[in-house]
Image 1 (cartoon, rainbow, N blue to C red):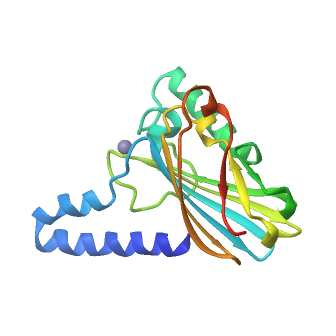
Image 2 (spheres, rainbow, N blue to C red; image 1 turned 180 degrees about the vertical axis):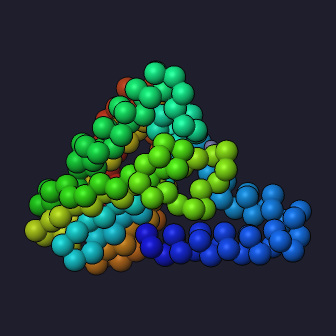
Length: 192
Ligand SMILES: [Zn+2]
């Protein structure tokens, strides 16, 4: 969410200031931005008539590398991944009680030349950030989202999520289901 982005930007500015004063601190500053392959973050906001899902993922989870694609196979992998992410109502099935339709999908990755990437994106460990917006007739009724990311992203092991809704704020961790279950959706639920 916006708060998170702001914090990262502020962190970068601070890191830049520290870097100027004391270069040895830069490694530590870089550490704060390190992502973990196999994990991604989802921030879900149920706000007014919308359900907005912000995703921050190491690019490795999405395409298996973290730089611009070089070979035809890599370019194809990027095209396929972008198509999967744009069809976000297959990745995220919002509680039918909320009666949502997929709205804008915004994808950002400096390495892939997509959108307006986060300037704090760490060098050598590229991310793909995405915002998936759903327009709903009864958004506040949403109590869960069935998440298909484990089926779509083979290397994904864990999702750390935060949900902000009228029912309150929640933190949820989803783990990759074992074996054949991994292709099944995993329910991210909150509220009562
Ligand atoms: Zn990485």
